Length: 302
Ligand SMILES: [Zn+2]
Ligand SMILES: [Zn+2]
Image (cartoon, rainbow, N blue to C red; front, side):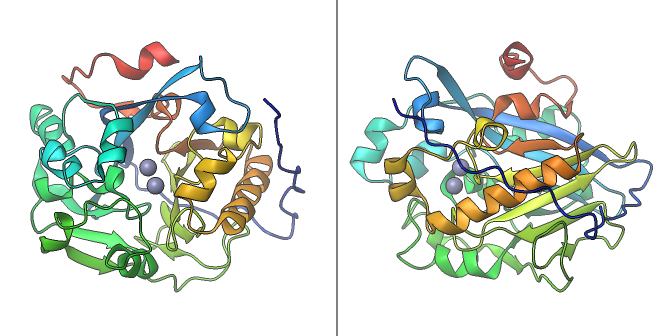
């Protein structure tokens, strides 16, 4: 299969500073894997092999912060079977998934204090990132206004039409009141300490975002949602295959530009841990919840 590669962008110019972050000492980032979607590398990036099995991570990341914990995306929820049944039949045929344990059930099993949770922060408003939201009734759902609007319109593919849209989500619009951040035009600094910063990165959906997290040890993560599906999308600059882009991405060119921006950021911050929402290897580089068995996921994939 012919491989098409994106050009290598220039690193961020030195005039764009790496933003300072002052994360509180007891901040943390914890993987909450809820299951997998069975895919192959051929589906994930251009030139990937159909024999290279890739179980796509479906889950959440828990950011612990003394001002309020945030769940980035929500993984599979308790109602996933009911939700999937609302999708087109062809989608149901080609979507083979395994639910391990929902985020709510895992947190409960880990003895987590739900009172600490202040919201679910969506990288974008697609079903596989939203399925678990109903398991946290009333919890604020932070989303970019463009994705919230798209969620209720017909341009958004795959959002459990007729199931989700009956639910009273407690939407909170993300505002991007801050100026340029690492080459992105605007940003939102969630707690004002630079530890959790969202930037708009439209393309996969109209309002997709990237979440930059800096931990007290100054290790930086970029939770890039579905900008790419596996790390090769960034490390080898291989886009999703053409047909998949045509079907699944809202704005192909916008997504491409944001991939190139992220590659520039990775050149500028060599230790940056990039976390595509569906790459198990990336979630292996976070802390794990105690006392939770999820088929040993990732540690094996490492
Ligand atoms: Zn998506
Ligand atoms: Zn997704």
